[in-house]
Length: 112
Image (cartoon, rainbow, N blue to C red; front, side, top):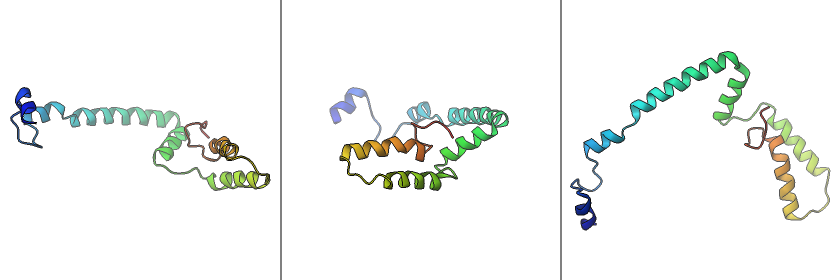
């Protein structure tokens, strides 16, 4: 470790980042500016597409759709209506096939 530090010319103590390096990597100001620009664009989007903006915010907050309970109940009813035995891989496929319809926020589902 000492040889590496010497070869790199690293004189700072362990776990210490020199000020000039910290300043060079500090992206807080750029991040604030980028976020402000994004928020401005999103507000324009919200003005033009209020329902879609609300849906985006719901999904970003990790909230389920208001009809989620009804939709998942329907999936369970469909599964229960077919009590025949199926192979595990087929049961898994059936679950995956019904997932986008029961969880509209999954990446495979179209927006609802």
